[in-house]
Amino acid sequence: MFPKASLIQFLATLSIVSTIGVKVGVCASPAANPIDMSQAARDAEPEPQAIFGDIVACTDANLSGDCTTLGVTSGVCTCFTGNLAGLNDQVSSMEFDLGAGATCTLYEDDNCSGGSVFVSNTGIINNFQDIGFNDVMTCFKCFQG
Ligand SMILES: [Ca+2]
Image: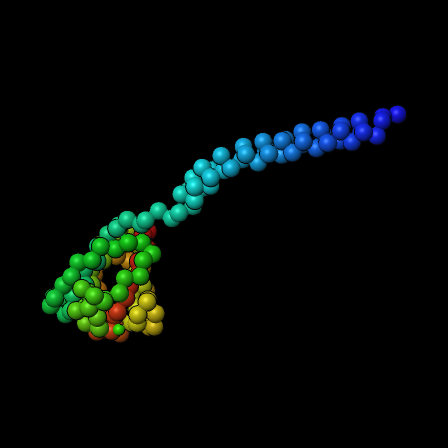
């Protein structure tokens, strides 16, 4: 039989040992984890998309009038605001130089909304009247093929 005092002392010692054990464990993880997490956060962050081609937007048919060449980034909605405001509701022809398999959707309204036209082949649309979309385009979004 243990004397009562010895048993209490033994339990107290055990408790200190286990507290130290926990502390060591807790101290070890924060040192490693933030590095792992910031690496994971960096890996999860989407890569900025690069411009993969150009389109030329013109205010008159047959690539005439005022023509503006725009770099195209895949999946990004581009609207005719700011320094592109001169094209808003004015585009009548376009040339697409985006490579094989690229697609574009042309939109009537802000934020790539409203009526739209899907363009599945690259090349030239000489007259937007032919596709019922003359002088209405406000935004476009293209995807790399
Ligand atoms: Ca419009």
